[in-house]
Image 1 (cartoon, helix red, strand yellow):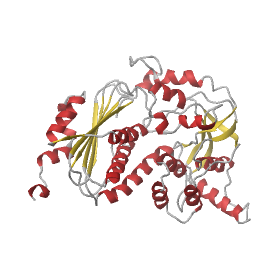
Image 2: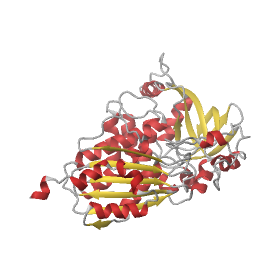
Image 3: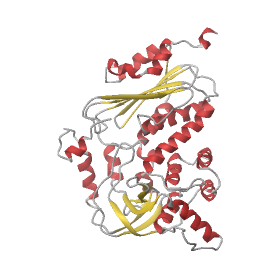
Image 4: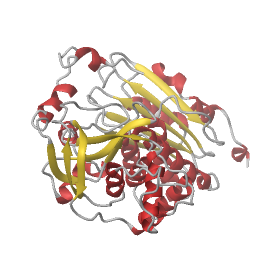
Length: 420
């Protein structure tokens, strides 16, 4: 999508930006790195890596010397939404990634080991009982922050992880020992479905979502291998998109049966230098996302424009826009499901130079939700709405008009309903 200038620059200031993502992070982590143990309340949060798959690194994220409800500010998207980029980086860079080596199949072995202990048959051959994995799973189930103590095999590595999919994370350290110093508070529905080893993961996710367990929480327990009949660890970045995709499809199964929205309505929002124009048109469901990356936005040295879409029958294959596509679609599906309507939805996302550090696809999901909650403006025609969108997008319309294929269909193709 865009050239990774940060890899080339490494903090030398070649991009000319006022802020440097790399240097901002190291100012924070240098104060943490010498530690070989820490105590703090995990938000709760766990991270499952993908490098070396199926043998990967995984473990909890813990901010040093942070306790109680304060820890929620480090991980909950709703808590982070009202902050600026610098504040978010400051918080997220203090989250220490504790990890140990695991195989993705260890989740199934851990489940068997727990079940065996439950019936008084512990210690069976071939049953993996990784203490760090079991502790990570116990923590992931929690609804509220959990006091956690971690000892590392060596002092922490002063590096910081960031990319376009994930929230930033701070220093990393290999786990020597990890303990929870309080009992996690687990929602009853989470406890029940984690214990149910016969239900499919998709069914469990559907049930959790319908019982108002947050998507962030569902993603966490799915990633650490606690849902479904055939359990395994799922790298965090994959699980984020998988949950977005599953929840979106689940909601759209109902949305396609609803009547169409009554008016052409435009919603607008801007978060962290991400500008969104969201247009709902009275037609059967279809969805389109256009992304415009301006020069000097995060990791971008020149203008980049891309798009992807799906018709009424649904998405075929994986989106070229990766996780951002599914995050935006999930928020749209939630809104349409809530108002019991369907629509053709076109979103234009313009990424401005103000977005100088990647924060993760949660920004897209929460910004679209925020826009749809704020109330929109109605228009008499698609053309008049498009003129309004163009007036607020910095990139000339001529540069991106070729990407709005579904919108063109709405402008030039008439439906049977228009003749009734």
